Length: 224
Length: 63
Length: 235
Image (cartoon, rainbow over all chains, first blue to last red; front, side):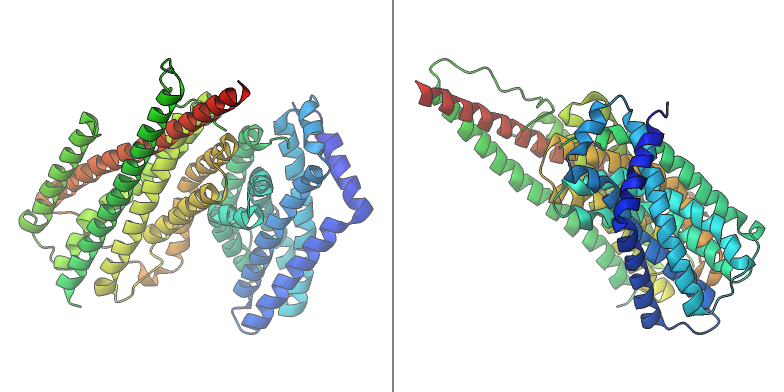
């Protein structure tokens, strides 16, 4: 069922290792968004966990929508989509591989953002950050699922790059609520058990949209 | 604005927006119908034999 | 060129709407706590019902289009999206007008209003996609996928917004009249109003679908005409 997943994933990662374009672009964009937020809001005060959590998710969403587009657009530029579609690999498997690539890029960006957050907000490198990791991973899984599914749309429509966040943000809203609430709580010192409801919501979101993406992707992947 | 004012405003907006939509659609419908009649007569004039009636179903895959 | 169906629907719609108006303004008693402003509710809730129903139609019609390929499903999806946007806007506007005298603010992040607002954004995304893209089969499929993703999301949105709200109970008022309709006359009025809006929705959907079908017919006629021109030029 998932034949071809490995090769596609390896191909994309190898491409990325060679040039590092996407990583550099994503990391710089997300850090930039973070800097803008810190300058706009100021890092002080007792509410810093909430602001930090919010900043993290804002940076992720906008950098993330850009990142997923790059994962697919690379193939568009070289006309490679036809090749992928002609191969015996199922479209759904292409989706799974692209999803994995998108998650990896988002994780990279997220890690960079987290480091900067710790520095700017004077958070502690400690247990709170570790507890943030599962929240973060659950969140980007859902974001990657949505972005990968809809990135094809942005590639083929006028003003597509602007349209992608317009489509992704309302769809991602519940996960954003859950993710930022859980992140804020965890950064303020709460245990993972106390945010279990939010985590379950995120998990449900992820399952739903990865499955939906898996089934619907064949309808949107179109050769040029 | 007292409470009656708010009530009136709410209901007024509902009817205004719906009426507006109906009018816009109605005018678009009239315009499209005129255009369809024009093209149909143009088609009849070009062909001596009557063309097969356009399929009103509109199968998918239009240009 | 009005078909009997559209005349029938228009008549039914006007009659049921008149009945609803009568009941709202002449029949139902004034609610004790909120006064006459509460009557907005009898049209506000049906608008929300139509907005959500319409989104369901957008998604189901979209799915049918992906599955069966016949353009009429896509037309239905698009028509439902436009109408849904209209009624969703009405929900937000009437909700805001209702909130001002009762709570003193034009907007509040009440869980129902927030959910409706996100629905409004989803409709906006769908219509923007359609507006920016050409009218091709491909775009129709994209829109269908968007619609399906949206409808799948709605239950999760409702749950998450409700959870979100319980952490900020500051403005957690339930507007009397949403549940706890004590007087049976209130229930009756609400039901009549719901019926009236459903009929109105069906009528408007029929109208809009008519123009979309006409547009499809027009495109076909233009194509036929163009082919004839080409054939004529070759003689």
